[in-house]
Length: 162
Image 1 (cartoon, rainbow, N blue to C red):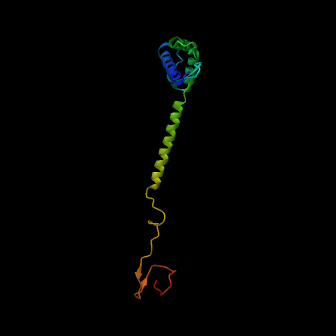
Image 2 (tube, helix red, strand yellow):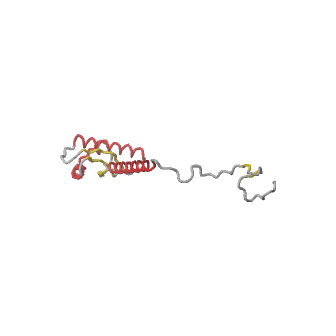
Image 3 (cartoon, rainbow, N blue to C red):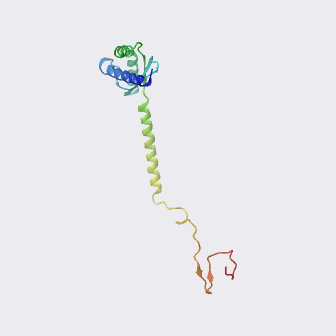
C-alpha cells in the first residue's frame, strides 16, 4: 500500500482504540491510558499501538493485562469500522516517551547545575599572566649621552647609522 493511506489508517486505528478504551472497555484493571501512536505495516496485516499509563509499576502491569484481554474486542471494532478485507492483528506496546522525557529533563538539570557551579568558580577569578599578553615594540628613546637609541636591538651595530 502507499504510505499516505497506511498513515491515515494507522491514525484511524489509534483514534478507534482510544475511543474504545475510553467508552466501551470497562475492565477495572485498566488505568489512565493514553494512546500515543499506532503504526501499521505496509501490507496492513499488523498494527502496533503505543500507549502510556500514569501510575505505579503495579498499575502499569494491570493495564498491560487488561489491554491484552481486550485485544480481540478492539480488533473486531477496528475491522467493523475500517471495512478492510483483512483486519490487522493488534499489538500493544508501552511507549518509552515518558521515560525518555524524564531522562532528558534529568540531563538538562545536571547541565544547569554544572553551569551554576562553573559560574560560582568564576567569581573573583583573574586572568592568568599579563593583562595584555601581546609583545609591544620597545619605545625609541634618547639616552643620557644624547644619542638616538632604537629600542633594545642587540643585532644593530653600535655607532653605525643605518
